[in-house]
Structures are given as C-alpha cells and as structure tokens.
Length: 502
Ligand SMILES: Cc1cc2nc3c(=O)[nH]c(=O)nc-3n(C[C@H](O)[C@H](O)[C@H](O)COP(=O)(O)OP(=O)(O)OC[C@H]3O[C@@H](n4cnc5c(N)ncnc54)[C@H](O)[C@@H]3O)c2cc1C
Picture (cartoon, rainbow, N blue to C red):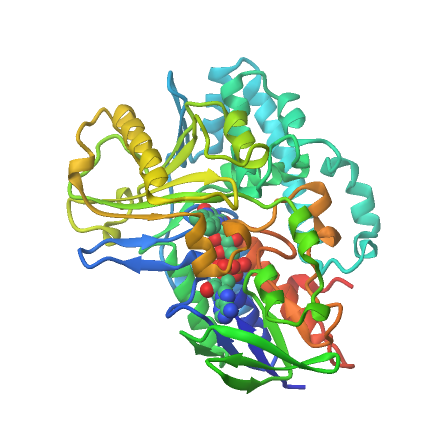
C-alpha cells in the first residue's frame, strides 16, 4: 500500500532510502537542511574554478555501488565514466615509498620484493579476504540486525570460523607479514573503520580485498557524480526534494510519528526515515521517545573526526599522485591521540588527494586541486591557529616528498574544515566524520537500531546504524531501511534483491 514517507537528510543513505522506498510505490519527500544533496559527500565549486569533493574520495567496492544502479535498471557508466587508478595510491614512509599497482600480479611481485615469501602470503591473505567479502556482502551486511537469530543459518555457521570475528586485525596481519611497512600498508584501510587495528575484528580484512584487489576507482567529474546519479534515480522514481528545509521537530501522536516541523510549518506523513546523524535525529523527539540515552552515546566509540584543507594551486605539483598517504610517523602514536588521549597528534599522519592528476574538470588548466585530510579525535577544540599549525606541517611534508618549494605562494584557494564544521553542517555528535567505529561490540545487532523501539512508524538509516560507515554501507543502509518500511504493512513483500533476509 502506498504511503506518504518523509526522509530527513539527502546524504547517501537518504538518497538510497528515498530511491528504494519510491520504487516500492511510496510517495517520498526528502527534507534536507543544505541547498544541495550529498551530505558529507557534497561538492562545492569556487569562484576561481575549483570543484571540491567535500568528503569521500576513495571509490572502493565498486560492485556494491553497481548493485544500487542495477536495482534501478542502470549501471554506473550510464551516469559517469569510472577510471581505475594506476598506481592505486602511494604510501610515503620517509625513507622509502611504496606505490600500490592496479594489477594484482604486480602487487604480489611488489610484496615479494619487499619481504621474501610475502607475495605468497599476500595471495593467501587476499583469498581469505575475498571469502569474507563475499560472505559479508551476501549474508551479513544486508540484515536489519534486530536479532542475532538473523545470523543463524547453516552457511553462516559453517563459515563463522573463517570470518575471524574474534581475532584482532593487528595480530591477524602480523601472522602473515613481518616487514613493518607491509604491516602498516595492510592496516591502513581499517582507519576508515574508526578504531585501532587491535580493536577491529580481522573480519574487516575484507576491506583490503574491496580496495587493493578490486581496485581504486575514480568517477570523472569527481565523486559528486555519484550523488548526482543517485538524485536522478530517486527523482525518476518520483521522489520530491525540499532543499534548505532543516527539520526542527518530529511530532508524534501516541506511539506513532505524525509530522515534521520545518520553518514552523507542519508536514504530515505516514512514516519517517531519519538519515541525519542518529543522535541528532533523536534530539528531534521528546526524551521518552528516544531509543538511546546521553549515557549510551557517551559510552560509544566514535570513528574519528578530521582536519581537512581544500586547496587550489596555480601551478602543477610534480611527483604528487592522485592518492598519497603520508605515513612517515608511527601509526599507533597517531591512533592513540585519536582514541586514548583525545588530543591533537604530536606526529600526525595525513592523506593527500589530488584529483586534478586524473581529471581536468576539477581545476583550471595548469592548476592543481588538492584535498588534505588528517584524522582527529572527536570533540576537541579546533580554532584557526591550531588548524594552521598542522597545515604548515602538511605542506612542508608535501614539499619534501615532491621536491618542490614555495608551495604556499602558489595557493590561490584555501579553506579549512574541522570538528566544529561537522557539528555545524551535519549536526554530527562530537563532530564525528565517519560515524561509529566498527568495533566488535558495535557490530550488527549492537549498532543503534534501524527501527524506533518507541514509535511504530519511525526508522533510522545512515552511517551510525547498520551496516556502518562508508559510501557502500550507507547505500546498503538505505536499502535495508526501505525494506523495513515495507514490513509495516501486513502483506509485506521483500522487494529488493539483497535484503531478502528474515
Ligand atoms: C571527510 C570524509 C571523507 C570520507 N571518505 C570516504 C571515502 O573515501 N570512501 C568512503 O566510502 N567513505 C568515505 N567517507 C564516509 C562517507 O562519506 C559517509 O559514510 C557517508 O557519506 C555517510 O552518509 P549518510 O547518509 O549516513 O550521512 P550524511 O552524509 O551526513 O547525510 C545526512 C544528511 O542529513 C542532513 N541533515 C542533518 N540534520 C538535518 C535536519 N535536522 N534536517 C534536514 N537535514 C538534516 C545533513 O545535511 C546531511 O545531508 C568519508 C567521510 C568524510 C566525512
């Protein structure tokens, strides 16, 4: 039965939920506080011709993104050209750098060159990671996670041991490789998962497969092409967008939500999907209607926030690749500043993305578009002077690595973005950038629930609920929640390919 559905937020999960819910026959309206869709994956274009992707820059797990397109009779190439980066990225260690080739056979040869026997070990590691990826993506990630019983199936039980849920990522990597650089290289993807490698289950070596083996991709025109494509698909399904419409309150009647309040105007709906940050979404309710208390949120481990610089350079920067990871300092020291001491790091690691190396659309001719990102503890003070201190450090390390000088004089666009901006722009709890960490006790059923426990017709989606942070998981989260919505009716039909679970 067709229902009137409001979606709060037009980030990736909101766009996905909107498209799937509309495909199921509902009348869907999306209310977004910003003037454009995308949320953390927004884009902005400067007056002097730079086009910055504000958040995601690693297009990994292309098969998951493709699944979204296929569900609507499309493929990614209907909307944008995807190129496979070669090398995928470079890891800078100070004394030497390691470039990750696109070709898997070359990657094996590279590992072998660095450590005798590591080529074969990499292949074993990747075969195990592929198994986890396939089981994870087919059997785990699509579950609404109301109960552990969803995971009771002969197939899952049979594979449970091989998923390495109870082994930590660090000891798992160490059991394969001895060379410290290879170990760091293999640990790097878990930084996206928001906890130290000692706290992340080895299950997430599936990320190494989703990245290193499936490749690092780039949509020509910038990451925002994905958002434009998702918006187009949603609109083709009949979704109506209301931009510059921040939701101020969710109004309820009995155990149901009735309407949302925007600019003092009430809009009535049969059900609401909140894709804004979970803690904020609950702040739109009365205290007794929330799933979780303040104590609950305080007790959670959040994935990092970050310091970002969006930079335009009026000259080319030689020797800089599309993706470069500046890992000259110790990974554990930086991680400890994020999770243990919750301070600005003494010896930071950071990441530089230079999409103008691949794409002439993102910077004026002869210029360079550069995005710098340094992971940071959530909730810390971030005034301009402290940001600038780290900016100088990052630029000088880029100068050293690229053997250039006077980069600062070549800057013709500069904008910083940090913890307080995440709070202001996305109502992000403590200014988190990547949601909740994927630690074992914050996995699956232990993540914030996709359904309200108090209000029958209120649902949550996005990187703070299942399956977790990242572009592909946020797309999946939208699909899961749209399926949950369909279960509101007596004659529930499981409409979408991957979610036919319980
Ligand atoms: C800097 C950065 C880099 C990243 N890099 C990568 C990467 O390389 N690869 C990758 O896979 N993932 C990456 N991620 C993670 C990925 O971007 C996120 O997991 C994903 O975009 C989250 O989508 P979402 O829909 O859950 O949340 P959001 O994108 O935050 O969407 C929520 C939306 O709700 C809106 N909203 C909030 N409050 C209200 C309100 N009251 N009323 C109306 N609207 C409201 C917000 O404006 C926003 O548009 C990165 C994230 C960041 C921040």
